[in-house]
Amino acid sequence: MDKPTYLTVVKSNKVVEASYMLTLAEQRVLLACIAQVDSTAELSENFRFEVTASGVADLAGLDSLSNAYRDLKKAAEKLYERSVIIDDPDPGNPQITLRKTRWISSIDYVPGEGKLVLSFSVGIIPYLSQLSKEFTKYKLMHVARFESVYSIRLYELLVQWSSAGEREIEIEWLKKQFQVEDKYDRLGNLKKRVIDPAVAEINEHSNIWVRYGQRKSGRTVTHFQFKFGLKDQPKPRQQLTDADIEREARPGETRAAVIARLTGNSVAKDAKPGETFDQALQRKKELADVKRKLR
Image (cartoon, rainbow, N blue to C red; front, side):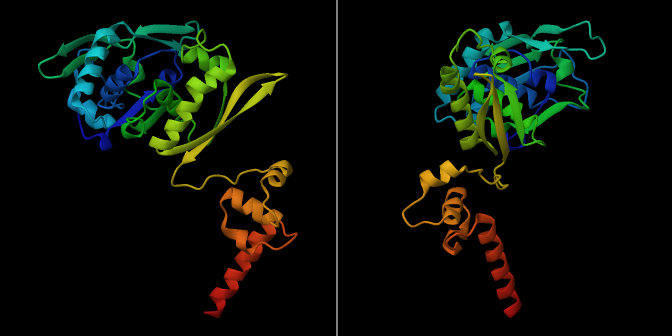
C-alpha cells in the first residue's frame, strides 16, 4: 500500500448510507483496499488487492505488530460472509428498492507473510469505481486511529454533507443503517455506546470537530442534529441563553464578559458594565483601527 498520508477513500453515497455491520478489523481491511481503487476508472472483478499486517499497523498506529497479525486473521475469517444492503441501488430502475450483496468475492490469507489478498464482489464494484457524482471522499488517515466502527460510519455520514456543515439524522434510520435496531432500545444507551464515543473519537483523531443535539417530535426524541467543520476553521459562535449566562456568571462579572469567556473570545477584559457582547466586539475593533492609524 501507499503511505497512509496519501491514501484516499472514495465511496458512492449509496454505500455511505447503506445498512451493514463490520468489525473494526474488517472495516480497516476494506478501507485499505478501497483506498487503492481508482474511483474514476473501471475496476475488474478479478483485480486482487493486498493488505499486510505491517501496513495495517502503520495505518492505525498500532504499537504491536502481533496485534495487527491477529486483527488481519480475524478479518479473514468472516469478511467473505459479510454483506451490505443498499437502498434504491439503481436510479435507472426504481422498481428495485434494495440490493443485498457481499463486499468481496474471494479472500486468501497468507499467514507466513501476514497478508490478505482479496477481490471485491461484482455487486459492490459499481459503488467504488467509475464514480463521477454523488460520492464521498476523504483521507484514510483521518479515520485510521478510530477504535469504534461507529466512529467510521458517523464520520462518513458527516463528511458526506461537508459543504453544509450540519446534518439532521433520524434516530431510527441511523439504528437501521448501523444494524443496531435490536441492540439499543433506550436512547440513553444508544448515545452512551454509539454516538458519544464516536463523537469523542472524531473530535480527537480526525480532521473535523463535531457536536450534536437532539430534536423531538411531540414528546419523543426522533432526530440527532450534528454540527461540524474542519478543525482549522473557527467554530460558529456558541449560542447562549439568558439562563446559561446567569448560571455561569462569576461574582462581579459583566454579561459581555461572561459571553466572551464562554465562547472563547478575547473581549472579556474589554467589556464594560451593561455592554452587550456585540458592542464590546465593535468597540474593540474600532479601538484597533484607531491604533493602526496612529502608527
